[in-house]
Image 1 (cartoon, rainbow, N blue to C red):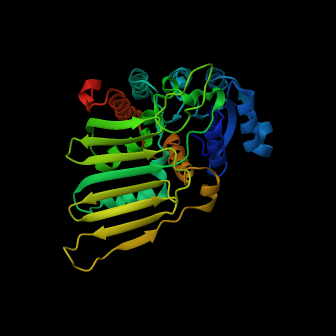
Image 2 (cartoon, rainbow, N blue to C red):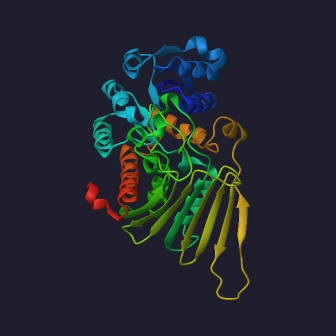
Image 3 (cartoon, one colour):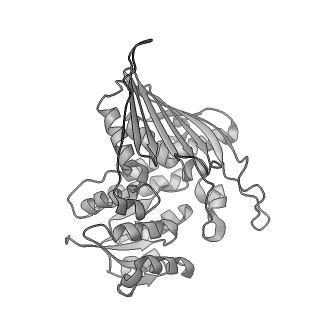
Length: 362
């Protein structure tokens, strides 16, 4: 593989444009092809490419892009429900792939991706940007280094804005997204697995669509996506984790707050402030020894996307994997397991019961 990797992008909506902007500041990366069936989305991509547009060939689908011979690696950022169809010709062409989350909207399709990725000789990477936010990286390193002792409790809070509008309003219906607990929350279920270093055994989710999208209609249909929930996940090693999601909290100072508590203390991280707070156990009425610090993020990385710089850092690692200079850090199996926990959470919320992961074959 040459030092410069030629990238193709399939899906040039909002996330595709974020990838274009981050590839523009990634050493050894050049976009040579884009694909999207919607001209409006292609226009967005051309706007992000700027004066590089003339050197980029546009296609309407992934099969044509794969046949072109113009790319060394492909980024897939198409609507969730299209991933299997989009990926098939890319696998057939033997191309390295970075596929946006969620890996798929159904466990059947996610397992198919795992099978194809396992049989491939080229890297397959599930895009989980939250792993690469520098403050989150520091948080995970501190937990794994034992700064809070034996991890027992993990809580993740995301209080944010509602889902944005997408082409054809596809993200208003669970049949297209896999449901909010798959579409949005797979990031956090992936973080839970990463931080606990264990697998989920049971899931309970209480959630509903209580505020957002209630007055929207699409060909007479009302959206059916959860906009708030609490999810508790029990892990095989005895750790437990909770996700607190609210998608009608636009005005909060920190969109994400993550807390890990162990037998020797607690550590918190706040995004986007970048602050970490370490609170060791000191005993009742003893002076507290709280330590706090801020993890800075490269300004160019912050400007290039809306995921606190993480897409930039993710691309450095994927680029290394494509060139054979580093490992795949987020596998298709990781993507499958995040979808599986999200699927269990969706089932739990609908049926108002605890779901054992064994019910889903895990």
